Image (tube, rainbow, N blue to C red; front, side):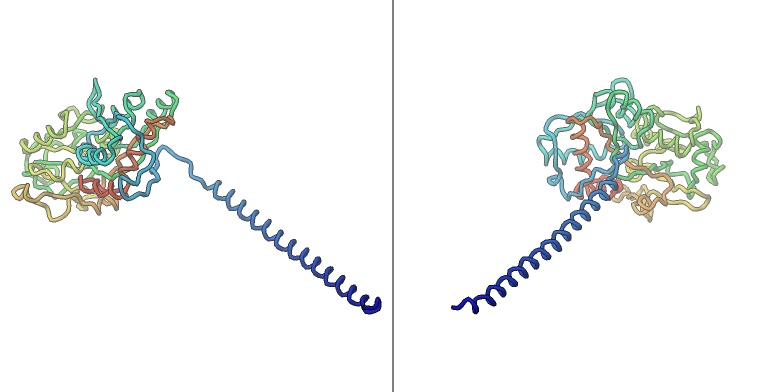
Length: 358
């Protein structure tokens, strides 16, 4: 081939090479800028997500969304002491046994206080003092308890697992449609002393209560119902709810308050509807009322809808109180709360008479 014919071919090859290099450079820069922009966008989103990360407060959920006990993770092995509220008795008697049946290495031992009655307050105090791995409480933590824990070098966390309410038990012969929270307060502060002051028969009122030092239910009652006023000297203090309900059943004018699952199914007493205003009473049981003569063939059941909606005037959460010390006690408390917050745990909670929280 002559040199004259080779020149156009060389020029064409050079132009094609320049075009390919220029095109490649343009494509590279275009895609590099896109990837850099995407990377910055992802980083900004990550920064935004971090800024919205919730800070764990003393009141917290456990974060589990499992369906069964088997789905719970990070379960420590060993024997763990726990204690606290007597309102938790139905859960301890059935659900805790079920947990241990399915999780053989996670063993639980309920520990009674030595110099005081069992209750939320004594259980939390035992937890702070190192006698328990975790505690069961039927009331929120107090500022004083949080401060005592900090003095010991750790924080306390409360994890809600169920809904409960206070139910008022009266003798079955008391014939009133219900009472208001203010009237209940007046009974326990000694201002109302006869049922005829509430539209009933001329029967002296005999009120029973557990001691304030027992914590839990009584502390909630003093705080939410009595607004901090002291219980009247005429009120008789009883050691256990079982003893108090026996007193109510045998004394025509008697009245007592306790955790709703402990009161509502009983055959020998009558749960009394409560209201925030006169005449607008909400029963703690499902209508229609089961008469004592029909019990125990049929028993009254909790008014779950009223408890969940808050229309019933005295409701509360049940909490697992966890020691946040980074050790096995914390792991055990969180695992126990996670068991109760699974779908299986919540169903079992419903069967014990409490109201599920999820």
